[in-house]
Length: 293
Image 1 (cartoon, rainbow, N blue to C red):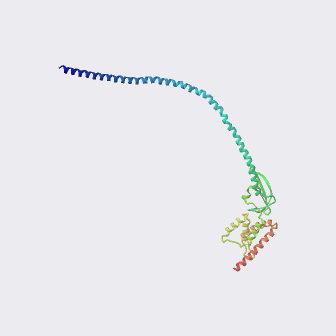
Image 2: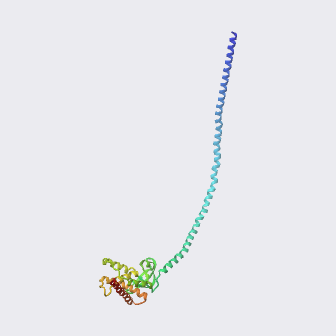
């Protein structure tokens, strides 16, 4: 019995030792957990003064930032003072305008010289004969300047002796109107060749043909004028012209004969005789050719 009791005692002692060890471990775990918890709690407590210190430090650091705009004030004033320096190129703008004006002044003589050259090419001299499309041969009496509607205009004073009329034509509008110089002797040869040709009469209504003849007469072109004279001419052997045909023929013949007389420096009547002899000879020749064919 004693052995059993001893064994039981030993077992109980071993159980007590195990329970004590468990209790000790539990206590150790509890202490460790309390230490960790205390550290965790202590960490924010220590962090709190850091945060407060940082909060307090912010206004301390902010103080020089506030002082910075005070120091920046003179910089702003310096920028305001620098405005006139930027305004310096504004002062330079009149120099640019001056250069533009100088360029215009330099360009103006070139333009004026070009205009003079053009004017010289188009100019007619006093006592010179010219052809005005709707009136025929005229003579320039003089070149005068007149103020019309606030503008100074240089004009040709042209006299038409047969029509007893004088016209004032601005120099700038001579091309537009169609005023031209007298034809040359070489051009007169072409005129005589057209007169020797065969008449070309279109088979259309007379009213339409009459309009075409009038436009040719008033065109100012000596070749078209010659065509009208050739087409409306009638020889003694040919049938007579109508009244309207005769009027158009005489108007065209007078225009052409005046220009021929001025070119050859002869009388107008002599020029008409020369033209009609050419027309008569050409008609005889054309009739002979037609009979042969």
